[in-house]
Image (tube, rainbow, N blue to C red; front, side):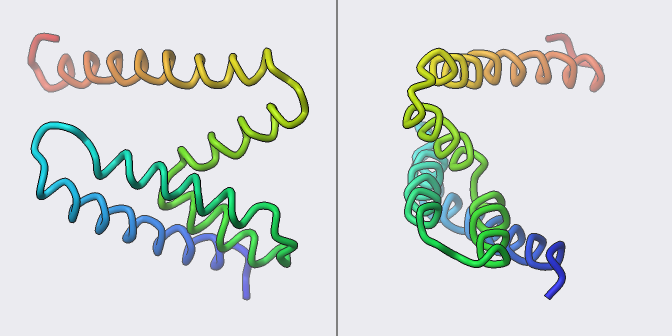
Length: 123
């Protein structure tokens, strides 16, 4: 099967799974984003489970990059940070964790401000 098709199929399934699980959990809670947290945690578990397995490249594309990538990119962040830690690259672990979280939150805020300005509202 075409590699791009495997990625697309895995990504589509991961996206639908994320939407379904997050919606199911979030429908019961109104304030804390528990659905997102559970998606992120389960995605990290699945990518951690799959990565060390000796899978054929096509299965890795489908499961790791497609399914887990569509389910949550947080799982990619988690496995890359773990690999840095296993290699003893502690500076890069800290840079990845702090940079992704702090700069990511800052980017969300700046995007929100820009979106409000484009929509005609004040930030």
